[in-house]
Amino acid sequence: MSFVAFALWGAFMMGSIFYTQEARRPEAKPLAAYLIFVAVFSTVAFVTFGALTLLLEGIGRAEILSNPGAAIAFLLAVFLPAFLLARWQLRKPPRSRHLSERF
Image 1 (cartoon, rainbow, N blue to C red):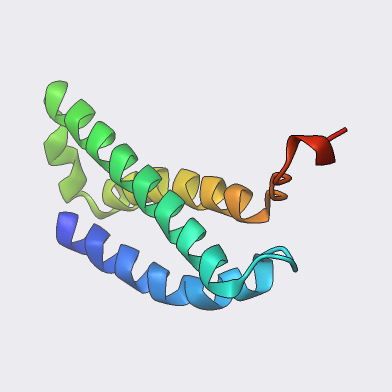
Image 2: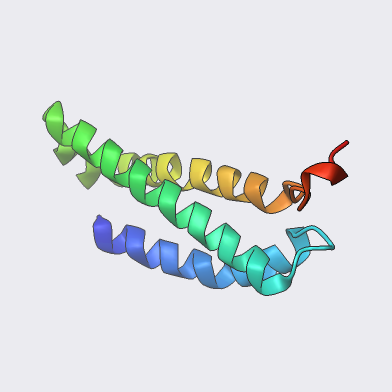
């Protein structure tokens, strides 16, 4: 399961190069937008994957992941929130540099 998740993560990171170029704010630099997206997506996906795996092992239901439908649902539960949070962070307007610019 973890190999499949890692392979999907890698493929998604390659595809996100093109996504971040289209979805970023105009004032954001392309490399910075990609790095923000990758950092947020990877962190959320890692934490969610670990938490859900520990939860399934804790309740003794880790064998359910041998079912392809359950494995797909598990990966969707990991990657969908990670994508949504990374997209939100990518599109969020930047903070102003100085306090005086806020007022």
